[in-house]
Each structure stands twice: as structure tokens, then as C-alpha cells.
Amino acid sequence: MNDAVASSAVSADEAARLADAFRLFNQVSGELSLAYTQLQEQVSALTERMALLQEALPAGVVMLDAQGRIVQMNPAAESLLGSAAPGAEWSVLEAARLAPSDLPGEFLFGVGRERRLSLTVSALDSAGGRIVLLHDITETHRLKRQAERHERLAAMGEMAAQVAHQLRTPLTAALLYAGNLENPDLPSAARSSIAHKTVERLKALERLIQDMLLFARGEALGRESMAVGDLLQEVGQTIEPLARVRGAEFAVADLTDAAVLVGNRKELAGALVNLAENALCAAAGGRVEIEVRLAKEHLQFIVRDNGTGMDPAVVARLFEPFFTTRAEGTGLGLAIARGVARAHGGGIEVTSRPGCTEFVFSIARGALSENQAA
Image (cartoon, rainbow, N blue to C red; front, top):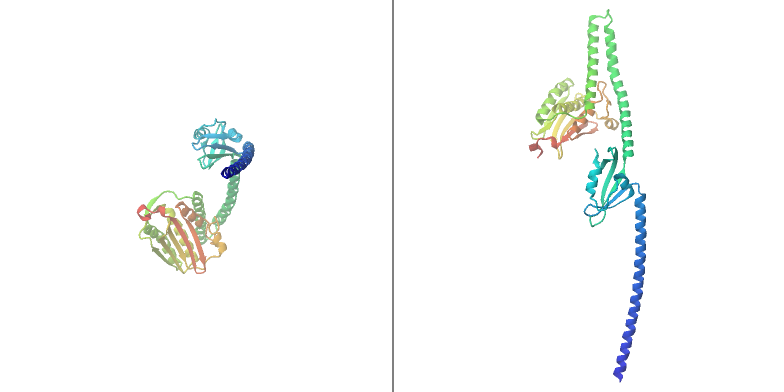
């Protein structure tokens, strides 16, 4: 009897616990169901907002799946490229309606390819989807080109004023000297002296025009193979007589182990001669040397003098066209030299202090012959 009572009590407890468990399960299920319903509502609201946002965006948006098929296009994208059915291949649509432009990431489109479009592709999800953003930059590109044109015109106007100023001085002097030659009473000795001065001014005018043409051309033309030593010898044949006249010492040090380079011999020699002549003017009676060495990525010609040095303000303007501190200078030599260095994949760097000025004229190691560049 006691066992039956005990068993009945246990069954009643289990039934109560089971009933509690069911109530808890029903409560949790109800809460989960409510949370799921709320989540669906939030997702629906977000989806609606996203759709409204895509419709309102001025930029085109194209959603692609992992296989590059179109999933969705917003109205802006359809207005730019035309409509496309979901599942269409994006690559086919892109090839049919976009043409590459002269700039990366920009394409030409429209009936006559007269409009310009910027295209950016970004990853959309881990499954491999992508999103394509399209921007009509036709007007932006037009304004940019217009601004660039205005800048070029302004630069040309400034250059023309500088050129006129530079040409006027030697031309005026030549005209004055030539006018004196018209005097029939001019002694023979004076006539010869004035004629010589006239020719000098005309030669200065010719040199200025030649420098301006070199500066306008910008890049060196033609390539030939040459030994560094031969190039230095050619430069030395021009500089050594000038150094003797100025009472200066001139030295050359080739540390390249007989390197052979490929470039424009005339332009390279002219640039180095120009740098060496400037150094001679700065170190009259002193020492000028050209040292050549192989750096990690460049072949460096170091033109060094022991003159008085230059002020930082002068160094900052050295490569400006027509800027010069020499009465007989055209102000284009260093600008031309920098153009030659850049045309050979390098550049020019300047350091100056009292007692030492260095111009480092560098060209790319790629300008060396293959066995030397290795």
C-alpha cells in the first residue's frame, strides 16, 4: 500500500514538471514567433528603404551574383545603360554599351559615345557577389578639360611674356649696334668692334631660341648604346678648356666599372656640360669634378664644386624656366637638363652649402644595357 502511494506521488510530480516544461516551451515558442515576426517586419522595412534609396540614388547601381549575372539594376543604371533582364551576363552588357576611354576606370557611352562614365566594381558578399557603381561624369570631365585649357592658356601667356622679355634684351642691343654701323664716319676699328658685338648679341639670341626649342620639346629623342667612359670623355673635351681659362681644376671619376648605357648621347652630354659649366662659374679658380656611380635603381652623375654655395631661396627656383643668376645665362639650361633626366627615367637633386654644391643627375638603371643592369 505504501509503495503504491509513493509511486502515485512520483507520477504526480513528474506530471507537474512536464506541464511546467510545456508551459515554458509554449512561452518561449511564442516569444520566438513574435521575435521572428518583428524581424521579418524589420527586414521588410529595410528592404523597402533600400529599394527607395537605390531608386533615389543619382548613381547607377548594378548588383551581380557570383557568376557575373545581373541580379538587380536601379533606375539610374537603367537610364545610363538601358534595361537588362535579371540573369543577363554583365560582361555582355558592358561590352555592348561601353567603350574604353583614354583613362582607366572611365568609359564612353551613348549613341555617339559622346558621354563619359566612371565605373567601380566592389565585392558584395563572401559568396562572390559584386556591386557595380556607375557615375555619369560627362559634365565633370568637360569642366575639368575646360579648366586645364584655361591653365594652359594662362601658362602660355606667362611664357610668352617671359619669352618676349628674354628676346628683347639681345635683340635691342643688336639693333643698337647695327644702327651705329650705318654711320659713314665711323672709324674702321670702331666699326669692327661694333660688328663683333652685334654678332655676339645675335648669337646670344640664337642660343636662347635653341634653348627654348629644346625646353619645348621636353623629351630626348633617339637611343644609342654608349660607354659611360666615352660620354665622360666627350663632356671633358668641352669642359677642360673652359676650366683652364677660368683657372679651375677639373676631374672625372668613373666608379661604374665600365658600364654601358642606352640613351640619347647628344642630350645627355649637353645636360652634363650645362651642369659642369654652371659649376665652373660658381667655383672660378676652384675645383669641379664629375663622379659617376651605380646606385640601387639609378646611374648617378654627381657634378660637384667647392664654390660659395647658394641660398635656399635660389635653390628652390633653380629649375624654373628663365630663372638665372648669370648675366649671360638664358635661364633654361637646368630646366632642359631636368627634362633630359626625366626622359631617361631619372631626375636631378641639388644640395648646396658654403664650400660645396652637388647636382645629382640620375637616369634609371633600366637605361643601362642588360648585362650592366643585372
